[in-house]
Image 1 (tube, rainbow, N blue to C red):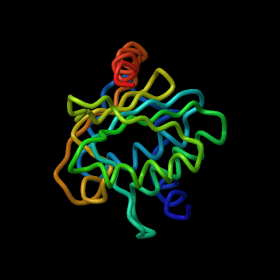
Image 2 (image 1 turned 60 degrees about the horizontal axis):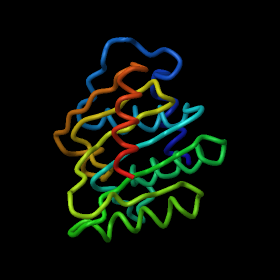
Image 3 (image 1 turned 135 degrees about the vertical axis):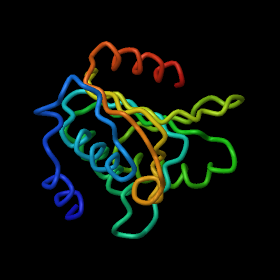
Image 4 (image 1 turned 135 degrees about the horizontal axis):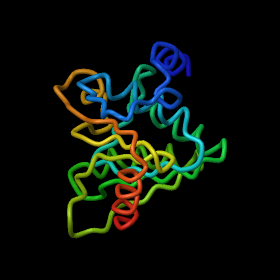
Length: 167
């Protein structure tokens, strides 16, 4: 929780002062923006990730993301996480699923037969974060990754509808 507080205090308030221009989230900037947006969510979060890998390290950013998703659920936000269930990443996603489910978050494994490789989130039918970032420590801190954050109710509704079809 201390890590989340430090991360949130170091960021501009995207939820309060979002731009209509898409924001390019390079490398580690994505994790901080994602945590901030989840922290400020009011009504609904729906997301899909190929890999959500939580470790025991207290500095594990995916664990911080999971904590924010759980906190959002507890304050009344409708949170749905859709994960890939096939091999070889099933074990990592099941670990994240256990933690999220214990916190009351609805976790769904995408239907078998087609790999769900999406990395997308719609927040409050307003914000979309979409790109190459999985929820792993390496993707959120070391890899060369590229994603966008867009403040667009129209795009958010389209992404939400797409993700709802994966359930």
